[in-house]
Length: 177
Image (cartoon, rainbow, N blue to C red; front, side, top):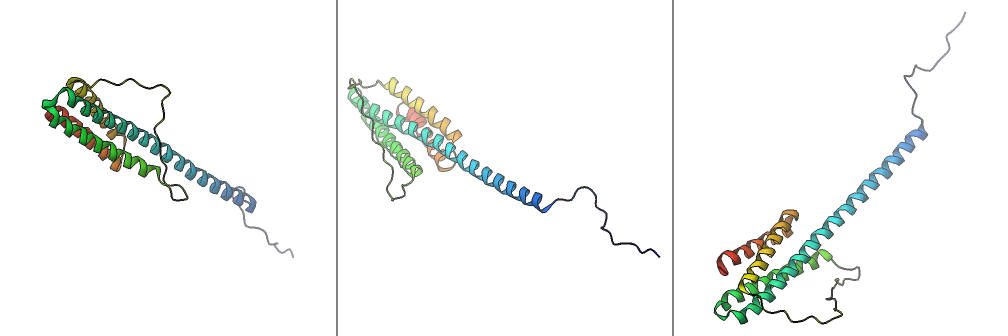
């Protein structure tokens, strides 16, 4: 009599070999690592753009402070208002510089990065003090620039830019009206 032989159970489709499973796991691990690395690079680019925006705001604040200080010579009757603008715009520049330094971080040896102003090849001619209208125009430019930055930044940096924009608007509407 014939006895049935043991056979494999029926399979549906090709079976995944051990080698194919290991290849799939390796490719998945490399892919996940690559995505994580790319995400890290993207944030650094955004951070650099935010710091560039803060540097521009700091330069505008220093320009406005110098303009207000120089305008006191032309408008001694407005010296209190102009000095307020000078002091507060200097404080804005200092706050922006502190945030820029914080974003720069520290080197592995514990020191912090420093920047020095670039020396110009030719001496610049002294700039005459701005008129009140010129100072208002510069403050309006600073206000718009800070407002635009506040829209693109996030967190503390957005709040800092927004408060600077509001202060510049106050100088225009109240202090220097």
